[in-house]
Image (tube, rainbow, N blue to C red; front, side, top):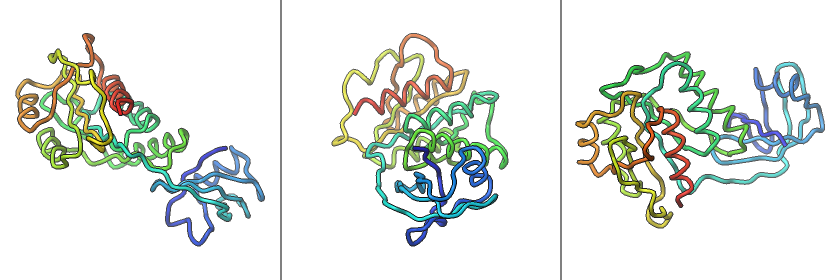
Length: 238
């Protein structure tokens, strides 16, 4: 059954409302009509089985039939340089699909893209919502404001229950030889460098804070490829 995002403010007292572009999509594209059952979620872990009561061009209303709650126990937070062109949009979409909890863009010494406009930020958020809806998760992958690399490192290591890893092409040791366990960690921070790679000084700084440099294999990976590979390995290493 389709799974649609509804703002938490629009779910009250066992009723829900969908308006604007989302309502037009549900009515005109998905062809929902009164009495149809629909699955909705609020992005905060709550999923609802509901029934459509009324439909018009710009708004859908209905009643909640039942609810459930599910959030990931192990959360992956991705700190990544911004790749060129529209490849960041692809990265957002795929990371949302595989279960990454947050993406924080980072500026490194070799970064080409160092930020994005408000319009792009809104577009990226929309891509995350659509991908999170499509894959059936109850939460929405968060996209944070851009940080510089050193501040991102300092921010990441404050929580001792998170494992911190940095894939690096000059590293020979793979961290993934052993399993991660939820009893040891409740999440992971993953650092992905730009197309030119991290500078040695940046890697040494990260290591000085306890961030582990690891290898993803012999081949040099693009930013978005490295982000997906590392995230999948960590998410499946529990």
